[in-house]
Length: 283
Image (cartoon, rainbow, N blue to C red; front, side, top):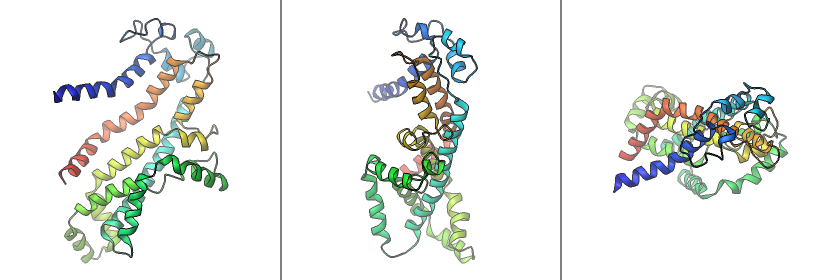
C-alpha cells in the first residue's frame, strides 16, 4: 500500500514535466490532433531550434510557430546572474547570522531570534508592495541591484536551518581552535564552515531554485531588456503570440530548456543535499 501511494505521488509529481517535454517535441500542427497520445507520432526538435534562434522567421511560421523571437541565451545569462548573486550572498549572510544566534552571546539574542522565526509566518506577498516602493524610491528599477535587493541578505528559514545545524557541532572543537589563537572569525571560517558544507550547499541549492523560478518580483522590477530574466521572457514570448492561438509548442520548448540548468545543479549537488537532510533527520 505504501509503495502504491509512493508511486502515485511520483507519477503525479513527474507528469507535468513529462507533458511539458512531450508538448515541446510535438509539431505545432499535430498538437491538438494527437492531444490524447502519450508520445507524439512525429517527434521533432524544430521547437527547440526556434527558441534558440536557429531558424528564420519564415521557418518559424512554416513550423507552426507565431514568428515571435526570444533571445534565449541572453535571458538565461540574466537568470544565472540573478539567481547566482542571491544564492551566494544569501548563503554567506545566513551562515553568519546562524552562527551568531548559535554561538555568540549578546543582549536579547533569543528574543531577536524569536522575532526572526515569527517572520516565517508572514506570506511574501505582504512585503511585495513595501519592497517595490522602496526599490522605486531608491531609483533601482530595471537594475540588477533592485532585482536582488529584497532577497540578497537573508531569509528566516535559512537562518533557522543553519542555526540548528551549528548547534549540533561540538563546542569543544571550536573552543580548541579559539584557544589556539584563531579567534571567532577564524573559527567560523576554518572550523564551522568546512564542517557545514552539506547544509550550506543545501541552502545555496534551494535558494538558487527559488530564485530561478521566481516570476512576480522580476516582472515588476526587471522589465527592461537588459535585466529581464528567463521566466519573464517566456511570459513575454507567450504574449507576443498573435490572435488567440498561443505558441504552446515553442513555449514548452523554452520552458524545458529553462529547467535544464537547475537539473544539472541537482545532479551535481544532489548527493550533498541528501546527506544534509539525512544528518538533520538523525539529529
